[in-house]
Length: 194
Image 1: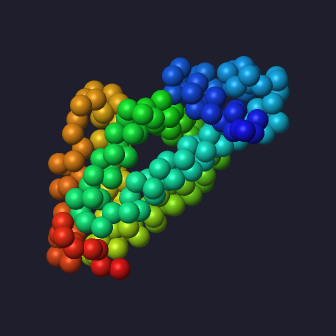
Image 2: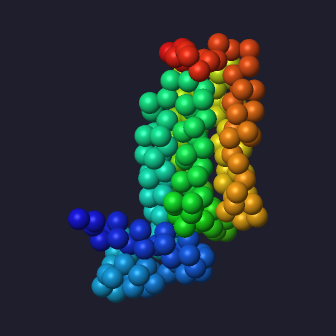
């Protein structure tokens, strides 16, 4: 059974993803979650605390999904398949959550106190991605991770806004092959070097 905190966070994500950032108020979250008035503010005293809590909640769920999608890959093609699945999930299955994440990112430009939480979450994603790419033999796994994360974010925004049918695989493949060029990148029949 979900805790009142989880119910509040799920409702907050839904509100922002479907109605925009202006819908994110403690009272609206309480109402959307079916919680007694004041419940959300018990967990998140300020709006900044609520925004930060929602961003961390989203990042934790996205990291779990990404880790489970990519953990079993052994070849570059399997990695590309997994990344494409993650992008399709972000833009179809969890499109509302993804829209909420981006709306909240832009909200943080006016709230410098939230930036450390975003940077911490981004750092966790970057480290995890760098480790995966290191296992595939990337010559500079940190640069490769930053490139892949930036490209993926661009593809996601593009699919959520102007081109919902944009195919992610060709762009991701070009970026991965570039990141792995000159290294011992696994072919379809080889395991990555560990």
